[in-house]
Length: 162
Image (cartoon, rainbow, N blue to C red):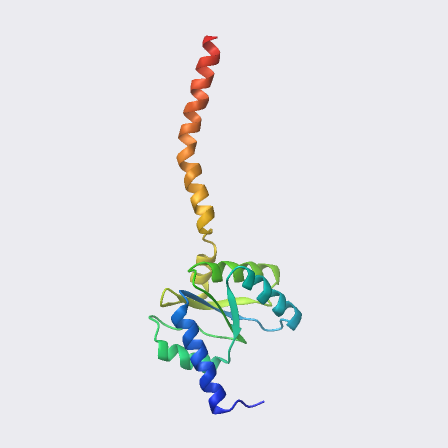
């Protein structure tokens, strides 16, 4: 079904709004994904403050050209969805989890990270960065490790002297 010019302008404006409000946008190919799984993905992503929007490639490219991120736009093969959030890493990490679960029915094509186009490989490496809470826990564990070793050593000396 053809889309009229006004609807196309609305879609371009919506994509431009997404690009302006989001720190990170992941381009996703969702070819051969049933509607039921797509709905489940949207619901789970929404619970993690990540949104999933489908857009025609030609209209999305028009919005990308107007927003003008730095770098070269990755190739957008297949059907295009935009996964985005105000968090820098969450969209890539969350959709990467679905990419692993759904055996290729959802795949990362690239994205825009902090105003710069990124390739598929770069977005997948960004997806492997742990969440901020996990990084804090790792940091605390790193700091706590020498202290814990000292406490164990002092405890062993105290037991030896008794």
